Length: 248
Image (cartoon, rainbow, N blue to C red; front, side, top):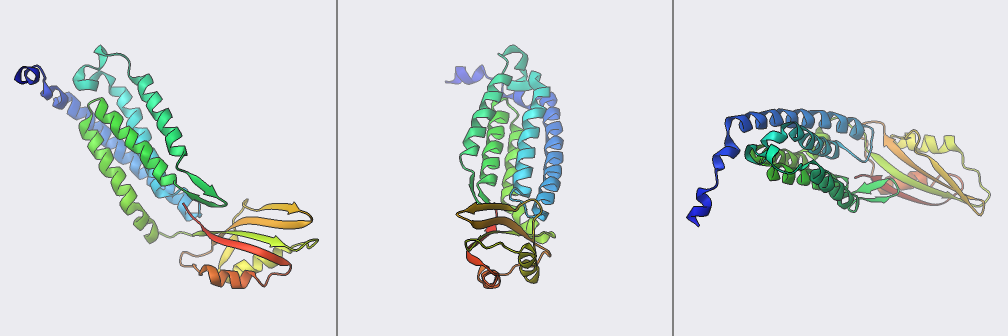
């Protein structure tokens, strides 16, 4: 056993050159985290399903997998040039994990669940790749940043100005033509407005059904679902309805 370990040179994984490369990766990951948070906040502010956690995790994973390609010569303790090209292997891993992540995303109307889980799975695959090529410090940093994103970013989102969204499904009586202005006024009284481009209208047996997302006008606008329903039920011609929070 001692002869096996005597042939291993662990110092090569912690050489000055590799540590310098890890520092560069650190800076790239921190930059990706900051930009991902900014992009995710813009989506969160407008009531979209994918928010700060999803965007920051995707940016972190993408940055980590891209930046290490520039240091392929330092992979595996500086033996990267001596081994078979690992780039296609990494590509296959990310493609396979992408399909796995897609399997955990569920969509029902305007409510999407599993986006953050899918992004975290992808981020975890990036951690595995970093470990596999010998960038241990970078792998540890990516793990810590990803965990912080999943644990604390939602709290950060709650402190920032944002407008949450609700998903509404209205079904009207046969041969009745809904009045869009009446629906708009009912929502405005509750502090909401119909999100632009979200309306979908279907007709079955001369019965119209309206599907749309309504976004709060102010950050603190948050009526309970029962209170919203008591307002919407007064809309003329309404036969049935369904209301839920549009969330991820």
